[in-house]
Image (cartoon, rainbow, N blue to C red):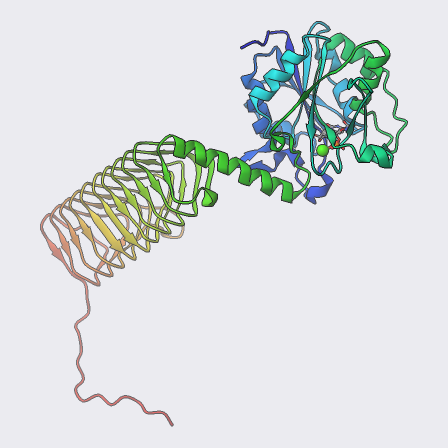
Length: 457
Ligand code: UD1
Ligand code: CA
């Protein structure tokens, strides 16, 4: 990469985000499951740099405490006196010789490529500026150019006259400035403007007074510089980001029925011939083997799915390992710490928690198995429930190989059903069942002949 190690990066993240109408600092709102600030941090980290400095303020320690993994220096801006003041807060940490790249915690879609271009553009004069042409420039600072097309100043919308407001070239906020120059200019900023803030943007004019021209770089893809100020903008950026991810996956061979109805909030590792139907949400880290199909309306989180697995519609799988050839759903719920071996069938309205199930076993209808172990080739009948909780503690149910559990069975844990055992329908299992035994607990059926049903009065 053409970037040298003498680049320092500042991320501004002290603002409240008034227009989100939220108690949460704006940079903690999430895009594709990740806080906005994390997107920016990850992009910054990918650039070769000397250090990253994040300016935080609104929400106090909540922001740094959310990201213990960040390798940055956190700089508190106690009062939000403007973008210039925010940058100034970091100065004791910034070497004069460095180039300084300024990023925004609430502009998450900026790419490494654009930033690399911007950093390189600063090589000429020690100052480069990212601008964009917008059809609707409302809310942004406008770029003022002279008759030779040089950028001479930036005027904030609130301070602009009508003619200036018609300018479509806007300040994206991203800039690269030589450290020493940045300090000089920022230290002489004044807050004589409509908002009584120290505007970072005023350094363009100060640079001009010193004979330094800011080199403008015009960004083509304006979504990259979209700031998140409102929940609508957040949703718009989310959709854009999701489409980019979906197309990237399709490009690598995943069949996605409708990229507009696909949501990945984390990382998806793919195999060959994966097919994903509509309205699937994937969170955390999910890995798919080869020939896996995911039906419509499924939710998968932190899960490993092996080859030839079919997840049928409306199924939730959280923190599980699914073996080759399993069929799950429709309407199944697989909860954390569940492991299915090969060719297991889990059917509708079945809930599994902290349960492992051996090869070829089936739990096809309306069951709850929690804290259990099921062997191979076992059939669990409809409506079977493990009573794993006594109101205070959780207990284990162990079911062996080749067991047949009839319908509507309750297994009162802790209990063990050995290999080859048969449990009759309707049985409440309170004692261990030995190998090849039949266990039945059922009151005798009474029959009353010629029964007269009551009639309506
Ligand atoms: C700023 C620019 C404007 C540009 C726009 C692009 C200035 C004066 N204006 O305006 O030219 O078009 O961004 O999105 O720079 N922040 C702090 N501390 C502060 C103030 C702000 O950390 O005291 C942070 C905010 O959290 C935010 C960023 O700086 O991440 C920008 O601040 P904001 O108030 O949103 O500036 P804009 O009015 O959008
Ligand atoms: Ca903004």
